[in-house]
Image 1 (cartoon, rainbow, N blue to C red):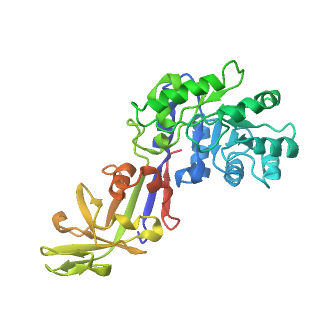
Image 2 (image 1 turned 120 degrees about the horizontal axis):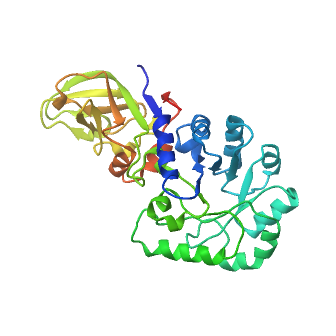
Image 3 (image 1 turned 120 degrees about the vertical axis):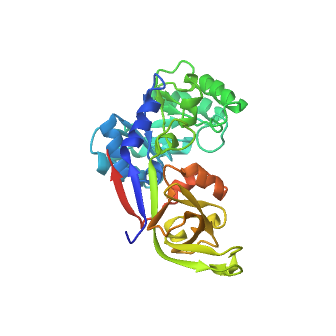
Length: 345
């Protein structure tokens, strides 16, 4: 191979979705925003629909348009950012359902698209999107008279089982939706794993489908293989890469890989992370360049044809830890130059 190859196991992804769906009594939706966390919303969406998903969540209307074109008629596609200015034609033409986050969005939607389906988001403490309790109290009767398709909120700390904010948000969500005859949704992946009390009517599996540690039983979904362009011997005291950021302390064998930060491999991983050649970890040495990465293959004992940054030995969260970030950013940073290979689905 001449370019790095990103392999996406759709069978593993849909198995993860099915496992999360089986954990509760609720319908399992699927969060495919940010181009399915960087893995391709069209291919991922079709695989999930084939596996039984009928409800999808994306961030913005343009993402919803692309997903509708991939899925065709039938599945419900919710827009989490709501009804933004200029969205009316796309929402109507592509049968997309905005999740309204404020009184302003509600007015915009009801004036532009009377009778068009919508959902609502309530803010239960995250202070990001949704109607706060006072705003909800003021518009509740008007909103409910229009028949929302779903009412959601979002957990801020679901990955921390012992965080008191989880139960606080659950209690407030129950108070704000008490007595309503409308589908409710609170649980993201963390909420699904946390407890069935958070499941309500629709859950929203996200990072767990893609192999994130929030769902410990998740099967690995992505493998990122990078070809070796050249190998060279480096003597003690010699440097590798820009600004002499790594200096050999022993006779070393260095492989240069065809990938870099232009491919979404975070520059901060230089001197902090490793790639894998078969079953051997090989440290990344020096600064990651735009198109090239140096790795120390001395302990491998031979020159490999390719190495893996992501795969069975090292998932997105391990790389995220090395970068001082999270697996979400590792996935959504993946670039467009990779040769993409899909398995299953």
